[in-house]
Amino acid sequence: MTVHIGAEIGDIAQTVLMPGDPYRAKWAAETFLEDAKLVNEVRGMLGYTGTWKGNRVTIQGSGMGMPSLSIYANELISTYDAQTLIRIGSCGGMQPHVKIRDVIIAMTASTITSPSSGIFREVNYAPCADWGLLENAVTAARAMGAAPHVGGIYSSDVFYAERPDLDEQMVRHGILGVEMEAAELYTLAARHGRRALAVLTVSDHLQTGEALPSEDRERSFGDMVQIALDAAFA
Ligand code: HPA
Image 1 (tube, rainbow, N blue to C red):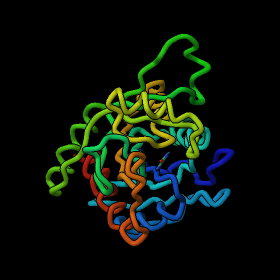
Image 2: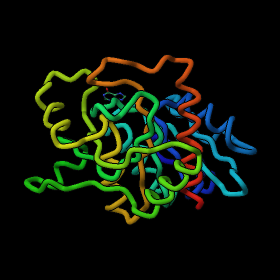
Image 3: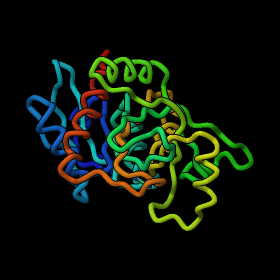
Image 4: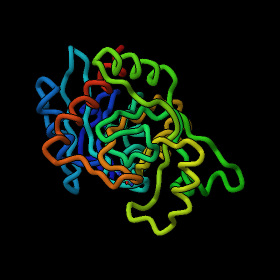
């Protein structure tokens, strides 16, 4: 057990999928895993462990934002020895060619601050995905008929941004989408020698103001879970 995860050591698999929303963890575990068992409910941040094609997998909610994700990822890595951590979540589209429902596979995650920014001080560290996982995810997405966007994303600290100029700079520099967790996940994985990736669905668009209707969210979320599982065990 850790401060925030009630599971016994051994109840958490070495491969962990991390949606922000704990109810998405429940839905994904019930939909994709066999013998899914609830292993964490501390603070309602649900986590389940089961098997997928014979492979043990945990699906653990991360909460929203880098400080929350950082707590769960640190404890999963340090206490439970998680080796592969894949964020599955939504993001806001930032480029005109990135459309609602598209899948983004994040090669890098830029940020202005994260729980790790105090370590780097004057260095603009570049958090990046594990190459093998990224390659597997692109292959899996294409095999499903998706045309994933692969490139940089922006991990913001705020959903309700008061600095439109920052978003403008991100757009100017080719950033595909904005979310709030991946940069810290990539940084922690690098620090501890683990594999990390973020597979995202575009749920809203900063330039057009469009948003994915709620009935479509589940299906799009399912594609991401499938891509993440395929990538983890390819
Ligand atoms: N901003 C930040 N995080 C997000 C967004 C957004 O527009 N959409 C989904 N996650």
